[in-house]
Image 1 (cartoon, helix red, strand yellow):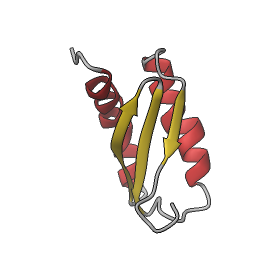
Image 2 (cartoon, helix red, strand yellow):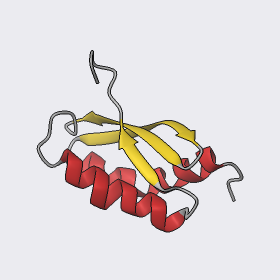
Image 3 (cartoon, rainbow, N blue to C red):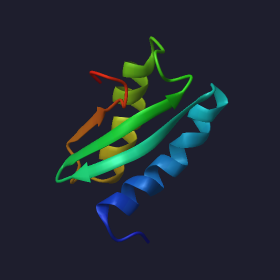
Length: 82
């Protein structure tokens, strides 16, 4: 069983990643800082109108349900201003 929060979040993402991949998207874990997880959406998720819904009701829900210590899940971008 994964020990660190980072490893635990990675394990949750490994479970949900296949459903994102089916639609051409993806997600990468950027960091875990205290009770906040920072994710970067990739592939078709970039610019998708449903990406906020995917983040909130898919990714955040899966992470916070599995890891109660996590309270915030936010998307980051490496684009300028993101």
